[in-house]
Length: 549
Picture (cartoon, rainbow, N blue to C red):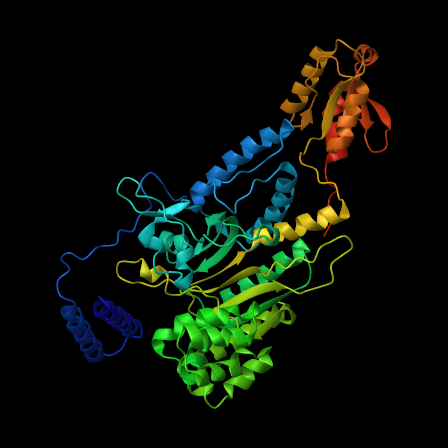
């Protein structure tokens, strides 16, 4: 079985070589010679009888949503949600699956989450991204073999009517499947949705088994490092906008890592597993990583020591230039390509004004198998806890990289679509924001209600119902208490507790005069407003101020 897998890999690589020669318009003789080699390798594989064919599809009864469908869906959702908010509704969220390591979100937490999402989505849209959606579960074989040692964290579902399914582990592999299935070669997309990992949950650190990912990806054949630089720019824009503290973005390149492993003497078969060990250097000291490499993975101690000399280095573009002169590393073709691209990347990052936030870190490995080029990860810098806060170690808050071969793994002909992207670790960000708000005892509004319709005397329920209906029909977010004869004091207290800024008070005298008494909850000032002018006055008082930029 292993021999067949190795032969299939040789067929795949030879097929890629033939396609590259055709793209380069090599001579007919050279192409013919390489095609003959490919046919010879295919002949060694033998007939395909009995061999399982991978079917590119979503599970039965599920569908993808393309950008056009998502645009329609968002308009429908916006209309529905706008109506719910107009009637003073709060929002909650509950887990899709009842699993250990999941959580409910109460209205206060949802208000925080919506602000974070709005900041992220605003940035994605500012950079011209479309939005898609994919099913929460995929065919098991769609996810198999894409995550290296992390594959053990995938949640498998029981046989569902003849299909073996798994909960999605991330949004990147479903995106690659989506591109191959729809034969797309060019798209800039974002996707915000829940993913699932059978990990050890650490709720206080924002580590869950069900959590949201916010992904942005650029797919297509473009000039080197321009899309990669934009992804890093987006990452920095979002983290700056969220104001969660100072951060550093570590960058590396899988080609540099592979070249480094090669010159250090790591066998080809151990590249990915040693890569997973190196990826732990942000959590444990070098000695522990070395012991794992040598004791558990069978690497020679002297090879591990040579790796240690490299992976403990970090710096800026000067380190890139230094390694370009390294007598051993500079002789490795893969490493040289990676270093050349990183040098170009730093030029673009300087133009984007974010080079001071970036560190070239040779210990950054990113354990996922599908990365092929530049990789990056944003970490919060440790600062003293603010008054009333517990020190909070949340680790990485954003990460991503280039994965040029993933789409080709789904395409029947192995056609590649170069891709680069990033993912924001929103659950960890929520943990930080929530803790800050609790420490500051800051009040968070859970509704967007602009005005409460209240009465000053008894037997005015009908008038309150008429007025609140007029306000709803005019697009005003309004509420009333569900009591026939509520006390005015109780109505005013409700506004103070929920943060409603205005109260429209109906009384017998107001009805005779054709006015509504409009009260500011904060200042307690009251003015009489003619009923026909009430909507305009509420909008004037509650509309955000114009920003002249």
